[in-house]
Image 1 (cartoon, rainbow, N blue to C red):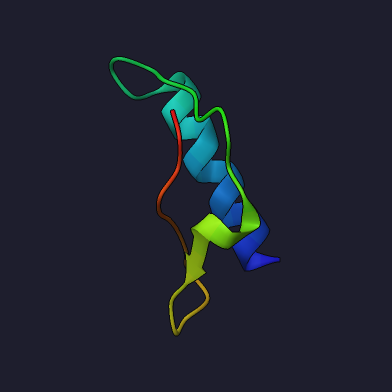
Image 2: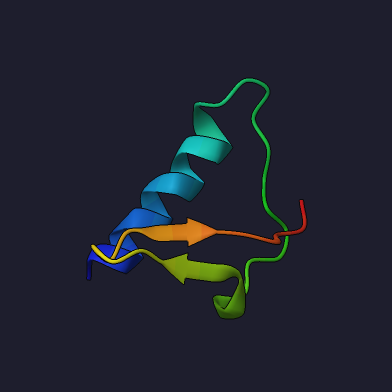
Length: 47
């Protein structure tokens, strides 16, 4: 569950709080890496 929540919070930040806001148009599961403590990290995304 921590992975899903982390990805959701990151996307919400990028869409609503970052300046300028931007959207990631294509997020794939093979673009998400997980650290040892199960924190998700997105890499190689198209925006």
